[in-house]
Length: 86
Image (tube, rainbow, N blue to C red; front, side):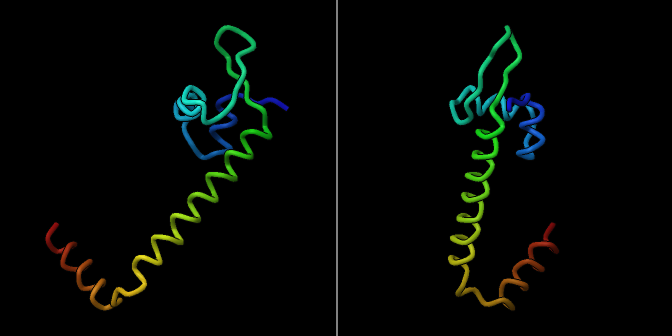
């Protein structure tokens, strides 16, 4: 099944122009059967969404490991100080 760039954007939680950029950068495969309208295979969009989810999950896991040794009270104090300064 093929879908439009807007439908792909809705599925991915991105803007349509971002989806177009991903197509132009070769990150997301698409066909252009007419002069302007791009069509994407639903399976390709869902696979890209799965890769995005996995990359985000990996980033969160790696980021949280980097802060495992942070003292929660010290972090809260730094956040409070930062808020007062702004």
